[in-house]
Image (cartoon, rainbow, N blue to C red; front, side, top):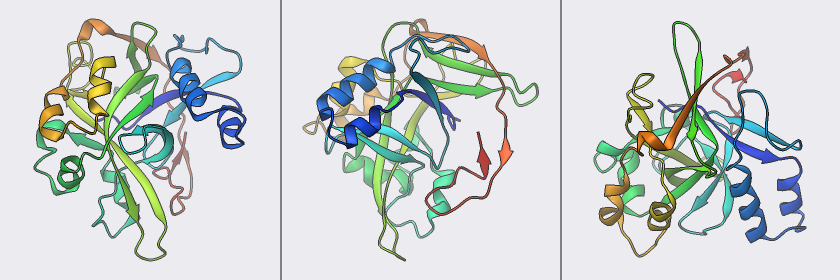
Length: 242
């Protein structure tokens, strides 16, 4: 269901971090603060910031339980046994109800390969009217999703591809009129538990539930403009440019 979400990026921030001009701590702090910005349908609150749309096959910032730092992973999970890179197309959402049953997710979840996915909002589209709806929190906090990740190794060339999927649950009353599923959104206390290495999958499983509908807000937004594009290995975007 959640094949499209967004995060807010300040121009030049990532380059400054890679160049060592700002510390890891300061980089993470700024990214989280930026994604707490309240935005309208057409404007970002800060002039030098913009909302980046994320689709399967694209890279996006996550915080893994392994490193507890901000890293760019590919949206679209690849389990270690996957033989085809293009499997990411079908592995971008992990259902909470079956995460311990499905082979795609089970091993990574049991091994506590958990991450937080940085976001400002997620989107759903009415297939008939093409009207899109943007879902975010109604306060100053970033929207952080529960995620599962894996560092997939391509057997053909040995390239390591860090990948992740968003964990989904039943929709709350705010999302239900538009879709029956939604991402698992974690508030601060739940975020700390999700990234706590001392807590195994059994102790954090009860976090995989819908956030309160009162904590969310919905607005109508513009339809996507889709343009056909060639897909290249490790740089694909489901054949479209958005």
